[in-house]
Image (cartoon, rainbow, N blue to C red; front, side):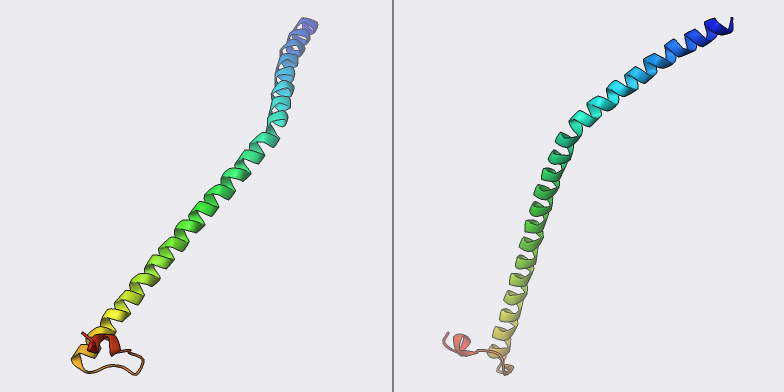
Length: 93
């Protein structure tokens, strides 16, 4: 009885071991492709995000320059310019 049980157990385990070994072999064979494609995706995504971030920063700086220019023009119109204000453009109008 013990021999039959041990034989059945070994037969069952051998199928699991073979399946596990085959699965591991497939995983190892496809691993370099997965790693390479993940690396390409990571570089592409981070470059895209960096470009978007830089674009947002440039737009924000442009908006701030426009705001400062409008404030300087307003000060020039009111006759209270700061020393850094260039009022020649406002006076010509």
